[in-house]
Structures are given as structure tokens and as C-alpha cells.
Length: 266
Image (cartoon, rainbow, N blue to C red; front, side, top):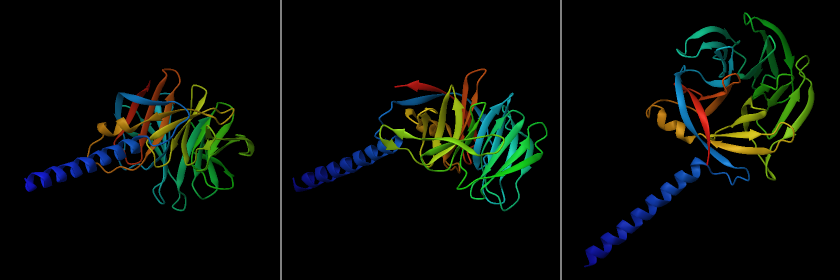
């Protein structure tokens, strides 16, 4: 009788611990107390991605991916064939620079650096460097609304910058309800909104460029089930938007795949 009681007690403790672990995992999946609605995603397609790329910026332009990668001595700017993942063209940054987010406006590519306070400008046609701007603070993400540039620095502020001088001409403070959202990383304009990866989290936050208000969250945890289990990988980072076909692509640092996704409202 005593053995039965002990076994039941042990089983109850085990179930309690297992339940706690499952609840903790569920909370990790999306742990924000979000004022804005939370959506999930469905994988539409997947494409090969260089698993050695420490992705910092990703965008779609005229049938190709353009990508910037980071790490000291390994940073680069790339033009990539989508279906094969083949690098068509690549520019390597000098060893002292840590590449960050990038965007294309007109016939120019703008590429941030992390702590070097430098943005490099390249000719889109041949990816030759044509200019340099400097800024204060850190560089994280960069995107464009088709007129100006928008930059994140790891905090809750996104600055709007003039493309001819990189001077700040406006800013927004990103808030979900009354709570600031920090660690804003890679940026992309999608259907008039700014979408941002949140560093170290498996989410995208949708932001109003007019007010900084969080319009919604996108939980990207389902993507992990489509990645090889034993594969080396780092955090989610990289959002690209094909405006003509309304396609959304996402990837991560050291990920072997780029996913085309569809957002599913819960």
C-alpha cells in the first residue's frame, strides 16, 4: 500500500513538473502581454539559404534577394538567386566593419554598420561603393518607404532619415498600448506598415510609421518545425517583401532556409 502511495505521489510530481515545462514552453512561444492582436503563420514555400550567413538585412528586388551579413571580418553585401540560393554578386566589408541592415532606394543600396557609426552607399547596378554617411549610436535595421529611409538602433525609437544626407528628419517611438517595444532589429515596409524583427524573439511586430503604435504581432515559432533539428542556427532575422506579388519572406542568422509565409489571423 505504501509503495502504491509513493508511486502515485512520484507520478503526480512528474506530471506537475512536465506540465510546468509545457506551460513554460508555451509562454516562451509568445510571452508578450500584447495589447495588439497576435497572428501566426503558414509556410507557403521554402528556398535554400546560405547556412553560414549571419543575416542582418534581407530584401526582395526585381526577382532577387539582396542580403547583408554581419560578424567582424565576415560581413558582406550580396545579391542572391532565390530558387537556388546561389550568390550572384558579393562585396566583402573591411575587417573592422560589422555589417547590419540594408535597403535599396532608387539606384542606391544603403548598408548600415553596427558600432562603426557608418552607412555605406553602393551603386545598385554594379554594387560599387559610391559614398559614406556617418551617424551617432548603433545601426541595426534599415528600410525605406520609397521616399525616405527608416532606421532602428536597438531601442524603441525608429528614426526617419533623408536619403541625400542621412540627417534625421523625424522619429517614432514604438509602443504596444503604453508599453515601449525595444530591441527592434531588421526592418521592412510591408503594405504601408513597418515590420520589425525583435532581437532574440521569434516574432515580428507591425508598426504604424505615423504614430509608432503597434498594430499587431506575428508569431513565427511554427517555422522551427520546418528546420533541421540538429542544425546550427541563431536568432530569427530577415524580412523581405515582394510588392508586385504580395509575397513575404523571412529567415534567420545561420538558417539553411528562407521561408515564404502567409500571415494567419487567430
